[in-house]
Image (cartoon, rainbow, N blue to C red; front, side, top):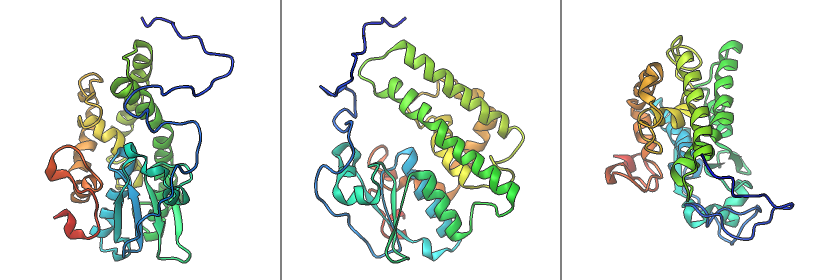
Length: 279
């Protein structure tokens, strides 16, 4: 068991970096650290992002919309290097005061409309284009149930399990066990649902599937934290079936590559400004 060596002070203060891969960008205050305007391309939608699980939600949806012929979904995807602190520029903070990717600026309206938080962006685009969100009350409600499930559940997978298993400077038994247990419980929630339904909200692919797949589908396929064996993800057969089906969609394959700067070089498209950038 982990040794209880830390005694919290009466008042917490940020006296030194906490260590770990993201220590240089973690801080207890908001707001910009430097002045820099965001670039603006020629398309209606301007996306500022990185190909993290939250980032690819939006690029996958945009590629799905374009595949259906929605020309208004053309977009410029600008790379935000979060390890370099790009998200703390004055321009980025104007679009997202929370300084997290992804952030979207819609220039099809004037003045341009900012949309931040990945779930909000998915909902905004689905409503704007009338796709991937059912219009009947029952279907819409079930889709939003699972969309907001992801928004509430993923911090336990990402900031919880992912941080302590993959990124924390020290491997600590208690938090890894605690968040592994919760992640497996969440996988079981999904597996039970997908045993009764092709997709999360029913028979039709929706923004709920895009949001959840970007985290849990990638985890099931071994693309997240290299934790597939540790979490025995192969045991969740219905999640596996669903994850593989979505992974084979051409728009998903395209969307995963946008704003990606690591891994196989053939999968890296740091910025996307034209459809041919993904060819």
